[in-house]
Image 1 (tube, rainbow, N blue to C red):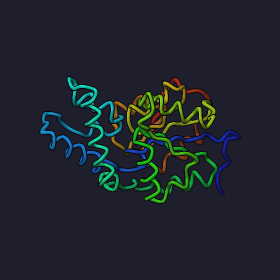
Image 2: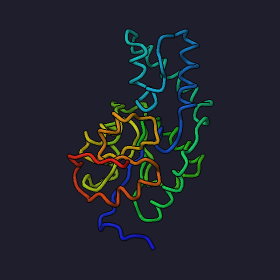
Image 3: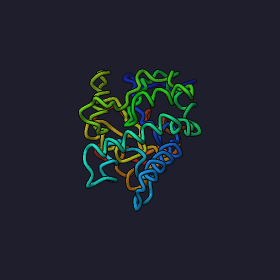
Image 4: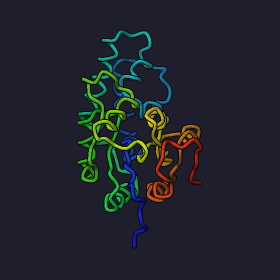
Length: 232
């Protein structure tokens, strides 16, 4: 028999890349293809570009480029991702089971990703897990701001989610910073692409998807915790 839940069941807002799916092959593959086509070199390890918005890493890759050139770079990447990159993806072991259990127990589930929204919907539907979410939110070209903090603020506002009873679940510092900038807690996903230094800033850390349920049940509702706890 399931354990009793608190009277106020917390909402869970999940990041996509590095939290629900292992998207590294598609993202890095398309980045490399675009950069090689432009004969660009010296960019180092591309893993650091998994997580932040395309607009952010295009500025890093073209620090002296014009706004038009950065927009073109982002457009070329997205064309590759639309063609083949999105399909070079896989759901992390245990994620489908985690979502099914959370949904069954009545947790309101959402997605907030820096990936373009239509890509996020396509990916989640292709893996048969879109059904578990009350809302799937991503970036859009027409948005004035593309930061994770502002994307998360939009989800919280549109869904009228209680800040005192919600967790952002993500693997990178961008997710943790976005959560804290919005006054909510973040659960670090240690199975993703983050580092111990990044996870140390989270309010709690889950080693595996199977640990998420226990952590959010054990933590009382309230504003983002001042102290950090971690699951060893």
